[in-house]
Amino acid sequence: MWYCSQCKDHVRAWKELHVYRTPPILIIHLKRFHFSATTHRRDKIDTLVHFPLEGLDLRDSVIHREGNGIEPVYDCYAVSNHFGGLGGGHYTAYCKEDDGTWSNYDDGRVTPDVDEKEVVGPAAYCLYYKRRDVEFSTKVVFEEDGDDEEEKGDGAPEAATGDGDPLAPSEDGMDVDRDDSSSPKEGEGVGGDDDVPALDPADLDDIGLV
Image 1 (cartoon, helix red, strand yellow):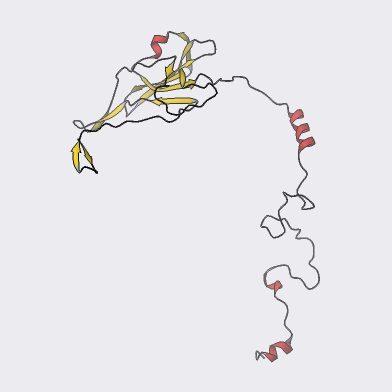
Image 2 (cartoon, one colour; image 1 turned 30 degrees about the vertical axis):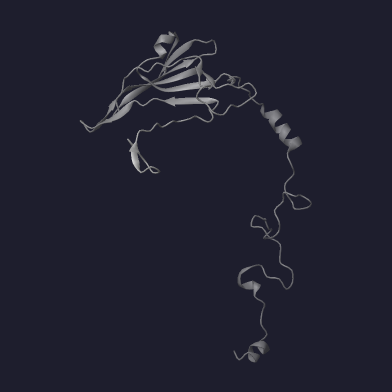
């Protein structure tokens, strides 16, 4: 029973949880461990959870729609498995390849073309889904050093000098580099106690210090 703060009584109540918006990549973490009040330890849950590999439809559960024909329909592309208990175990993964087949990744060993029925098992721990409008790119682009240097040489801005460069730090900033080798002008100090002008002995006599 739930206590209602308005009627000041315990009444039956229903709690609803709405999903406002779903991400392009959806990761579902299954609860595989629970605390046992009898043994006072966390036990592993090996219950088989049936989940779809294609067409996870969340249109009836999502309040906000992205528009432009984007629907919250997902396809599974990877499953992380856990074997063992909380004190120690082993992880493997099923991944969907570009040709639509599934592979089993177990440390350094990869077993290709496994049956989809093996993917949905009691060891499934984390489920990875992608929205159907999302496309994965496996193309790797390598830039040659010569082209990269040429691009930097043609398009890179010159070093900031403060002469008409709006990005150059101002003179009153903390990042202005100064040339310590140049000598100060006459009547100027270079920092520290030298910034205090020298006093004439006659001035010291006037203020009663001598």
